[in-house]
Length: 176
Image (cartoon, rainbow, N blue to C red; front, side, top):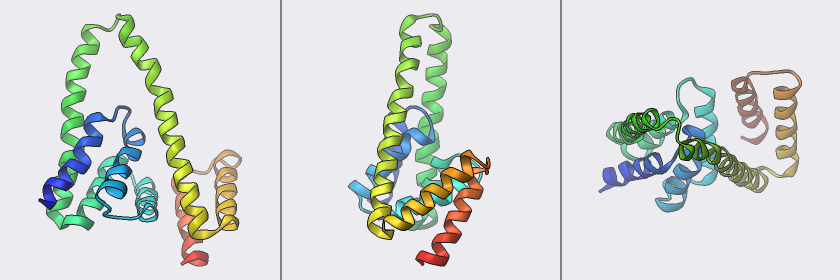
């Protein structure tokens, strides 16, 4: 039953999520944190941060990590398969339809409506992480990390992975 739950926790977000890893992260969080309660929002945020620091698609890394924590090696394999297989099948089917109807106004409109939905979902995720950070670390650490990250990314053009690693180091030194 555990393995079926792991499969569904990653299959459902991947089958209904459109837009890649960033679009399905809030859906995975709803399953892993909200529905099954395998981890807290703080633990999910840490998993996401670690996943962002490593190369390859974020959803598969998170599925592997969470699946392993919940169900060992078998859980990791099931979670990764549940993440990859539906996306691959849907992508092949959608590609065939989009090529066939590439000039249809409905296809063009659909593409225009997806971007705002992804922005809203990511915004909600940011607000959720901000609230969790404020509760766990206080406003001073949250403001300092947020401001330093924004400055490093926008002014000094740091690579996002460097910002994540620096934030992890800050957390280990001052919040651990």
